[in-house]
Structures are given as structure tokens and as C-alpha cells.
Length: 247
Ligand code: SF4
Image (cartoon, rainbow, N blue to C red; front, side):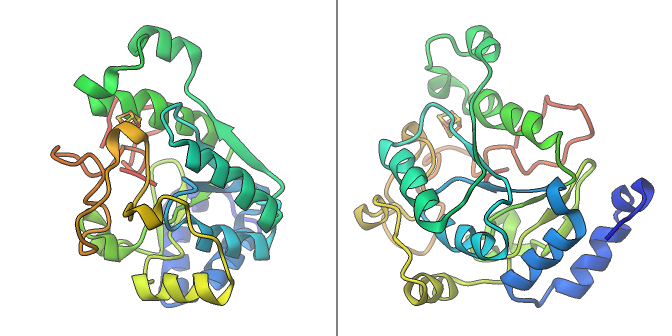
């Protein structure tokens, strides 16, 4: 499906797709995204606690859809193992590991301890900048965000327009029960840390088990006034100095 550049970036396309897809099954959303954007579409995945569902649906639509994985250098070893085993099992053929730039680390976090004093700055170097660079080659991306995660995600649309991209949130409407049912129906393996009490899994310095299941993201940046890493903050083209969203 061909659209001129003005239509793609005006928000009209995203608004139209959101109206059409807001009650659609995630697979229908992904098929529409794939049909609309072709090789200009990527999935961003953390290979975390809930990632297998969306990765499985993407693999069923087209296993060659690029999957962007933010390897921050601070991930649990179990996440790296899970990224490899799940990729093999689902037959995904284009999983790309995004790593922080050497110069950014040398300048901003030479001792890999920035997380101790400035988590926003650390996320900026290890997540926001690498993803901004990778997404410059795409027109649209897919996220795994869901409304039941709460906070700013409570009003999440299925399709939204940012200053630079169209974003698809195919699981926006799904509940914890929907995810569990899909995992069971398709016999998908859980991230190994889930059974140890981690409902949401990011970098090891900033992730803890949660005491109860009422707040999925309670174990992320626990004790801090921070709930997102910054990658979902709408930024103007080329602007890289604001932090504040997450996978
Ligand atoms: Fe750094 Fe923590 Fe953000 Fe990971 S989650 S990039 S360790 S501040």
C-alpha cells in the first residue's frame, strides 16, 4: 500500500488505522502494519517476561520482520539465553542486537556505574540513543505495551503517531489472562526469571522481583520516581535530549 510522505507523517494514517484496528486481534493489527509498511516496519522487543506472545504472532505473520533487541550491556544472562533460544524456536530470521555506542559509553558512563547516580542518563545512553539510531531506517514500529500495565499506558491507543514514526501497540487491549491463555495455547516457554517472581524484566541493576502481582512494573526502578526508560517519549526528529518511556 503506497502513501505519500505527507500522509504518512500527518497523523491521518495513524488515526485511520487506529479507528479500523482498535478492537482487532493482535494478529490482524500486525498483518495491517506489515501490509502498510512492508520492510519499513520493525518490532522492538526486550525478550522479557511477556515478550514471547508478540514475538510468536510476528513470526506467524512474517518471520523476517526485523526485531530490534536492546542489549544494554546490563541484561541478565537469562535474558540473553532466552533471546537466543526463543529466536531459534520461533524461526525469527532478523533479530538485531542494538548496543550502546562506544563513544557514548566512553564519554558518559566509562565505569558502567551511571545507573547508580543517574538512571535517566544511563537509559539514554544504553536504550534511547541506540534505538533512535536503529529506527532511523524505519517508518513504523511495533511495541509490546499494554493498558493493564497502568500509569501512562492506561490510555494507550492501538495505533499512534509520533513526530517521526507510526507506532503499533497490538496488545494494548489484552489482559494478563489473555497473555497467559495465548502462552498456554501455543506452548510458549516463559522467561526463566518469571518463576523467580519477576513480572517485568529489564536490566539487572534496575529490576527486582515484585511482592505481589497487582502492579506488573513494581519491580522496575523500585524506590525511584521513574517507571519508563525513555524510548516511548515522543521526540522531534533528531532530538535526543529528553528521556522519560519503555518497551
Ligand atoms: Fe541503565 Fe538501569 Fe536504564 Fe538499564 S534500566 S539502561 S541499567 S538505568
